Image (cartoon, rainbow, N blue to C red; front, side):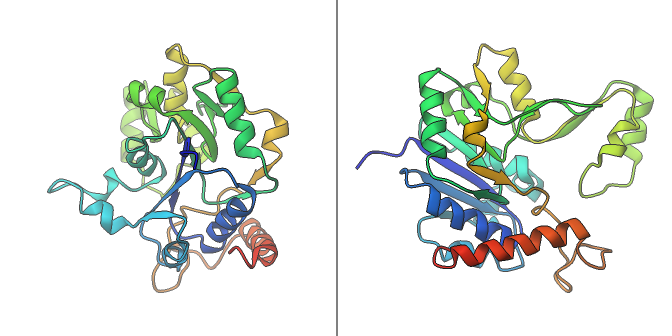
Length: 272
């Protein structure tokens, strides 16, 4: 049997239906041999139990990762999308690894072979969907389906974690004093004249550009074989209600996406 060339890395936190669709469609449309590692960040909606029921996944619950932390260390070092990908990526031993969001639907076979062939054929270090920067946001290769050469990533010693860089001292003080929300909204960043927001994987992209690494925007013919639903994971959930703090329920957009996911899952009933 051919040894896997790719390790797939995924971080999950709730969004149970979307996670089920991600891995049901992945299973159907990814016949290539690969390792799949999923690090769950304390899901309370049944996501973890669903993942553990899939024997072809290597699932790492939050408690297992906590046990490896040094004394006095907090969960912030291993939770959050970027921190979780960092924790996984340094442990990869295959030539390549692919980051996968937990709200992606695969639509056709061949996507992984196409990406690997392009990666090897052109000697690339990174291959993914390019997202240009805009009004304070730094450009990046989107991490929802991003293929990286393991040796390059580990040699750069870089990180997937998001952060904000602010040049003006007064703006930096105002940023530090703001009420802390769960996610940074575009309008918030845009109000800071000297702020640069590095979303997940943007700093990695900057380091790739600074080095002699080779990267490429994913061709549309390959990108058309999957879709990123977006904003269906990482929502904080209250254990007593199952809803986001202070929310009466999902937004109209979230409800529409959830209805779509539930409808699509019927097509994957045997796989999900």
